[in-house]
Image (cartoon, rainbow, N blue to C red; front, side):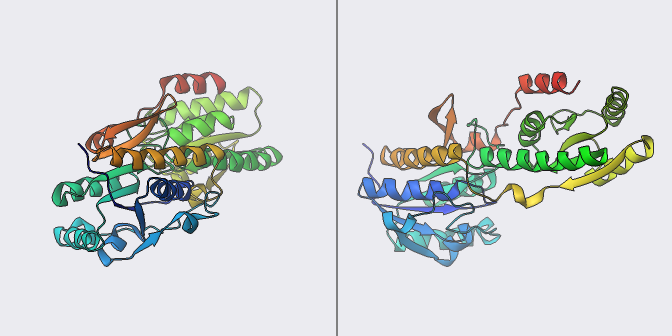
Amino acid sequence: MSVKPKHIAVLTSGGDAPGMNAAIRSVVRSCSHFNIKCSGVYRGYQGLIEGDIRPLDARSVNNIINKGGTKLKSARSLDFHEKEGRAKASKNLKNLNIDALIVIGGDGSFTGGMIFEREHKIPVIGIPGTIDNDIFGTSHTIGYDTALNTVVQAIDKIRDTAISHNRLFFVEVMGRDAGHIALNVGIGAGAEEILIPEENLGLDRLLESLRRSKKSGKSSSIVVVAEGDKIGKNVFELAQHIEENLPDYEVRVSVLGHIQRGGTPSCFDRVLASRMGLKAVESLIDGVSGHMIGIQNGEMILTPLNKAIKGKSEIKRELIRVSDIMTL
C-alpha cells in the first residue's frame, strides 16, 4: 500500500515555457485540496542545492495562470551534475521533511530528476514543459501551443513586408533537433518551403523549388527553417547561397529567437498545465514515481522517465505530405 506524501516540492528547470506558471499553480492547489504541504524551489536544481525553498499555498499562486515565464525562476546547474551537489539537495529536502519532488522541464531536467531519485530514494514525477515539443510520451508539451501561435503571428507580419517589397524571407524558428514548430507553423502560415531536421531537403531541391515559385508568378516567398535543420548551412549562409544562385530574389533573414518562449500562454496550454499538475500530485498519492505525465488522444498518461528521455518524438508524416502539397 502506498504512503501518501506529506510534503511535495515543485521546481522548474531548463528553458522557460508559457504555461509553466499554470502548472505550478495546479500543483500547489492540488496539494492544498489533498491536505499536503507544498513548497516551491526557486532557480531549479541550483536552488535545490542552495536551499532556496519556500512554502507555497493556494493564495501564493493567485493571478499567475495568465503569466508567461516561471514564478519559481529557472537556472542551469553544473553543481547538480556532481554527486556532492545532489547530496546537498537531498539533505535540504530532508531537513524540511519534503518527501516528493515534481520537476517541470524537458529531457535534461528529467535526467537530473531520474538520477536524483535513484540515488536518494525521493519520489520524482516529471511534467513536460518546453516549447520544442520534443519529449517522447506526450503529444503536446506545455508551451508548445503558445509558441506555435506566437510564431504564426510573427510570420504573418513578416509576410506583409515580403509582399510589399517582393522579397524572399528565411525565418528561423526554435525547436533544437526537432521540427515540430517549423513544420506546423510553416503549414499554418502558408510558407513556400519548410526545412526541418527530420527531412533533408537538400540545397538543389530548395533552389529548384524557388525557381518554380518564381516562374509560377510568385513575387514573394517565406521559407521556414528549424534551427536544427541538417541542410549544412546556417540560415545566413543559406540566404547568401540563394542570393548567389538566384539573383532575381532579394533575400532577407529573420531569426525569431527568444520571442518564441515568452508571452501569455494560450488557453490550451493553461488547461493542459492544469491537468498535468493535478495528475502529478495524484500520481504521487497513488505511489507512482519515476514517471512523466503526458497527454495522448486527449487523455493523461504516464511514461517512465527513462523512456521519456531516451525515446524520440516523431514528426507526423501526414503533415509532411500536407506541406508538400500546400507549397505547390
